[in-house]
Image (cartoon, rainbow, N blue to C red; front, side, top):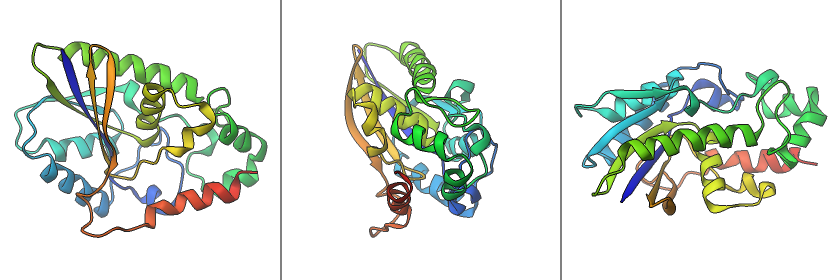
Length: 224
């Protein structure tokens, strides 16, 4: 008995474009984000989802609504699928956080499991609530035949689940990249995860575009 999880990151927002931490701040999709969701919908057009789940934040629910398309499915919203809470960092850019909250930021980059953003949530707490939620979703969709479910959520949520499933050391959590509109596929069979696809964005662009990979360079420069 198994469940195929389609973990989909929401489309782009203005804050994504500007390089600002969003966390639990409720930001709308921008025009690019809407188009990314439409392309994800088209790419997944032949998938028969038994259920569609979403974070309660608008950028995720709006992405889910677009991906739903003409399917006769209600979008089931879970607050535990929301993004990691970034506390005082929300609305700020990478360099601004590093300047204003340098010690906390460096501590978080070094060990996000135990160190949270200033006034925010650490990776341990995020992973626990996400894993509990996903386990509940798997239980609700488990059957004799493999069921496909869509889970539209956030970059931090998806990274936390992949890190947990693969038992990646905490110091390597930043090695997992999630672009806006990315699709990940994980088949969970009798509790064991098979990672079929990570950070797939081939549906978004006909040719490779490294614009979103700039965050790697930013992280590298700010981490001391």
